[in-house]
Image (cartoon, rainbow over all chains, first blue to last red; front, side, top):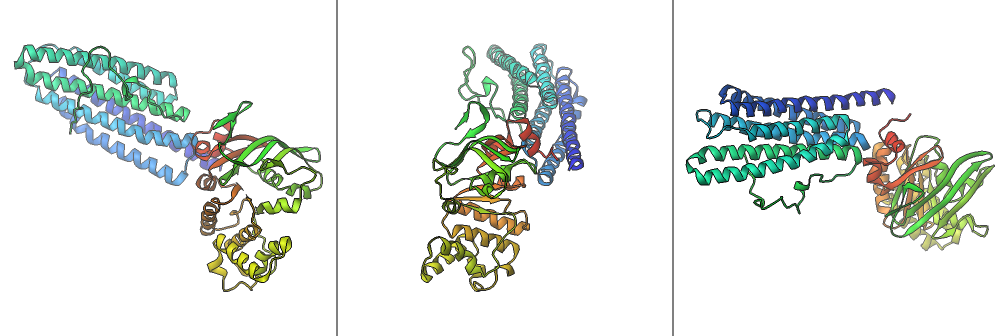
Length: 242
Length: 265
């Protein structure tokens, strides 16, 4: 019994390790996609798009490993919650890869145009969002609820940036209709980043579940009764890439 | 649902309580096999008791219909309440108690007599019904135990010729024949193959519509499949008691967590 338990522990550890690798891979995709956008780098953007196949493969292969462990080990308690968490989290990470691809495509589309203003807020937002993703995965491996709450706090910050950027771009489009073809894709990029932040919060919430056994919505903005600060536009239809 | 203040990991289920212990302790001479066990079993629900070998779960089960009275040097403290009445009260009619609280054992133990006589044994002893009544009781009990179709043509053959799984269902029929209110099961499937085990589990889910069932099992997956509530015993103590899904998905006590994850033994 002791030996089989040890083998199972190793498999669980390996599962988390592979999830972490997938997270790092996708985080690099996200970083490159935003860099491609700001530096008009089509090559880099194409690299991101190609990388998505690898991320998808990682997703499938980790899910298969989870299913195998469920079938063969019939895990209970903490082990069950860990495997359930990994299965959910890979979907969030895979989705973040998709958003990186969308940003990469936008970078290619806008590669030949001079931006009407230097991109400042989007890289800043991207930096924050990447931190959230990294910390959410760190929280998972370290089983650290402190980090979970830090991720949730950062999400409020990202939400505020998104609302501000939205207002600003709307204002610019009203004043200078000729930039609409640039401003709309950039607005979508901001939206993608905001969605990446939400997926990172999902991951953080799963970590909390894994540790406490309680499934809760931690981020205020993820609750149905949430009212954004100030006179912000209410729920907008979500951009559905792909 | 509330938990008792002094034992935060012991749930007290809502609704009708059929059987309950209060500060139950069991001694075998000087050895204390069970310590201060207070737990309530809801009516018409299956409660599973789990724990490593020697943790006291079978000893506890035997306290619930005074089977430990038969063991030299065994002494019980505390109370066991069946519908609110202490079964250890001096004026309790013990044969009647054992009829109301029946027990099925680990090894199928049919009497060396015919299938029919096995089931008829209890009713004959308790109230000597007429032949027609007895036929009806035997058939009804065998049907309830999901055995009738397999044995209706061999009622007068020896019970010892049945398969292990059939013998165990016969023992359940024998318990049901005296119309119990509670059925205690002490590892009823440990001597059975997976198919026979599956049939007993199905049977339990049918029986629980009418009876309160408490089962001791070594098989955690069995406990998680069939029970509504589960209790974890360790070294004579009840460590945690709660809804089965909570015990197996997110136990509160570290020791329960270790056990259900296979970290003991």
